[in-house]
Length: 331
Image (cartoon, rainbow, N blue to C red; front, side, top):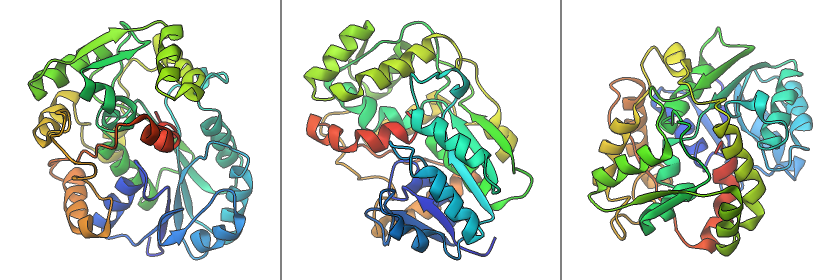
């Protein structure tokens, strides 16, 4: 594909990695977001033509409010886009309104379109342990969640990005849905123990009731996310997404990265040590890091080299500011 590929949320948690993976493979990229050079705003359809006109495909991350998605997809059809790859979430058939309403609506929109669509449904990202969702509690020495016993095959977000890049540029994937996970399922207690051992410091995991978890979120100024997050953990507890999936290897021809390997490669950055790593010290977040990002993205697709980890600010105010993007770029 010689036309530029538009990457929505192109400065976000998944979008910046997708852009890096595409560039590493030699594909022209049109990064689009409220903060990118190509400005994109779901609530302002006047920004849509700059994203879609002349593009060959688009990586779509649904907004919190799914209302703009159907007209955006229709605009993509009119613009003549060849492909759309949608980021959704694994187990969507069991959500039933408890979680991921925007992603479910976006799936309906792309499936009902005339575009050559592909949907990716990942498990929880490994990078949730180095970014907002679970990172700050790990730094504080205690991660407490309403999850106990049922394992989760966490997936490396860099593997997801490599899969998306392949789907946007290769034939044979139209009309397909790929479940993406890591190779092994772990409980949160096992995941935290692995991180603590690699970080060389005590970090404990505590199982909470949904009510206790909601109370802790409210105390941290994040009460508006209690229902959504409790819904996500309830779906996980039912076992719908506990078994590893084969989508990464099916698309890339390579096994997904294991959690143990990811932790071993990530811990030396100091991301789980208070004061050990400044925000955005690693990762393709600015133009000055573009060359490094490209080299690392190439390693993802080929030699399975070192990945990057991007921690973020840990205050409640910062979490509120970024929770929407980090949660709904799939858990």
